[in-house]
Image (cartoon, rainbow, N blue to C red; front, side, top):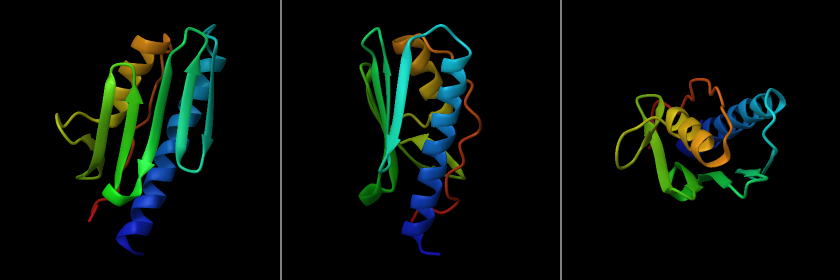
Length: 118
């Protein structure tokens, strides 16, 4: 399997895991929110006006997060998605963003990245 194929498979699995966790969180709360996943782009919207976008970025082999609080890039480091600037883990950072901006408490599983990104 090529590095590109490994990245796409891992990124898609990550996006699906996030979508599943968001769906569970919405069902278990009274937060009015919705999500959609298509073509490597996950959009999460709340009735309060929050929009968080999580997408794969193939050319850089990264997962990008866009939110009111900023834009963040995560790359594969030692089997985890790590922030390219601060080194934080995608799942923990995204859970904090969802709580802060959409009022949605999401329990994200460990989000595996390809062991070798390049």
